[in-house]
Length: 328
Image (cartoon, rainbow, N blue to C red; front, side, top):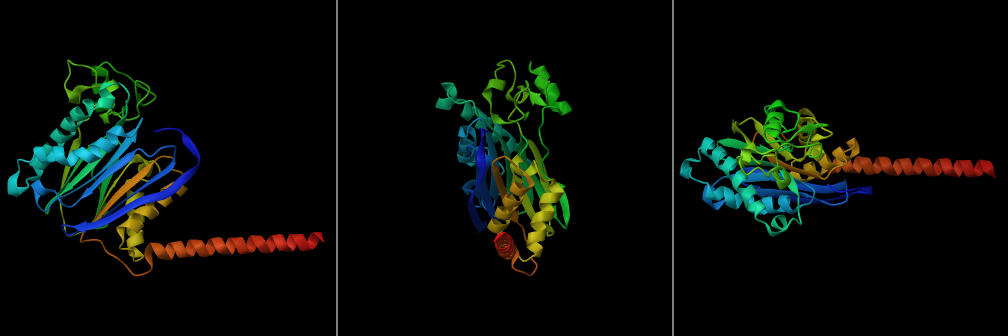
């Protein structure tokens, strides 16, 4: 992840889009980290899959090579495993996503920087494939996805941490150990793309290595009550729970905000204020069930904050002038 800066970089890279009946946005902020190592995918056009969309967040560590390469290559690799035809069977798509993660990791292993030993980076990956009828989420690591539907929160992934019993067993069976809740006392996640120093056992399958790229898959049937889907790196989840994040997004919508880009940016700023020290990336996908209230939304909140800052400055200047008058 790199060293920390003396002050956070708060400029954001934000993109918004629409397609397949969805409105979406992604926003990224470097924050306190010395480098930005996140990458993402947000596509509503996938030739082999017709009216389907894919969204993903890749949280790099130890460099950005694997995260960037994952963002560039995942969709292409996934399309190679498309044998579901026009039916878009969610179970087959889930299997294809699982195979794609593992094949993508093998492609990473052949990168020049990896072969030469120049790069040792890795990344967690959370990817959501949205069909007209289902949401299929693949997760490897501790980036996370959550669905808000009918006012309730549905976890779409669960973090892969070394101290989880299943993860610890795999790590130890592969000759590793868990110390201080880290793989070999070093890596804080037990599944990731890249990180090939933990994938050296030629006698074991890729999914049996100390650190595995194999994703867990969750499939959710779409409902007319679905409001929005969040995918984010752990820079968000370090300071917010699933419920916190959904409540926050829903509150902005209730205030009249329909621009997903502004909602993403406000979420990042909020997490920074809560103390997040990591890179932050978030994708929010809005479904038809989202309820947008009345009001000025995010811009109204920004105006109120600016007014409060100006008022604070005015009071500070008044106090300064009063103190100066007393000293004369």
